[in-house]
Image (cartoon, rainbow, N blue to C red; front, side):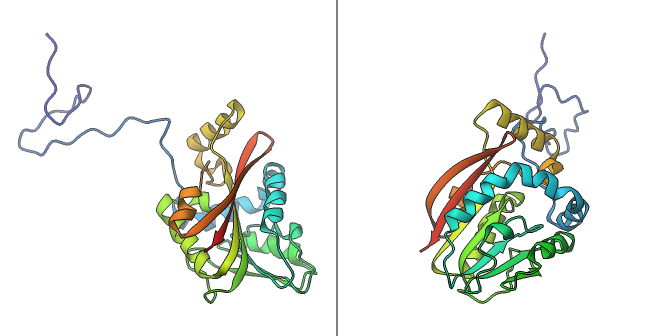
Length: 245
């Protein structure tokens, strides 16, 4: 005869039952849908370790996405541009970095990544870089006309993404544009391999993960205006352009 499971316990739970204690369910079995996040306090250390190797990989998988993102940003003379999470500065050469009428500011938490970004900013007097957290930007309200955030917001848990996008909206002017880039949710077989890899080994993309920021942008008060996908080396990226309304 098949034994019945104790209320509050699963049939596979073979631990001795203590009738005086509150029922406690077993730890959930691993799921392919579990998403892991790098703890925020680990991020600076992780990216200090990744900095020497980051560019070789990141340039291959993100080149087209960054190029399209700068087109979508449509920087005009007189614009103040924020790169929120500038990393090693891969987006700096793609922006109008030698036009005196354009002011570009890049921020990142990692000193090691900023050191590499400063090399790309050499000879570009309109580019300023500083260490800062995108959750607490050291700028006045309404400082920027355009914001680029590439492969940063997907590192955060969903509630913190909205917090970061709120903060970016605070420092942007009414009518300002934001363009975000994240690894795209998989649609093809090779993209699913990337998805499985980052779920199994969270640091495979530096803690990044396939993400759709549409809802997060809307919840932070941005109006999403355009969405597109790009692909490099089998990795798809999702670009969103939104407006401060």
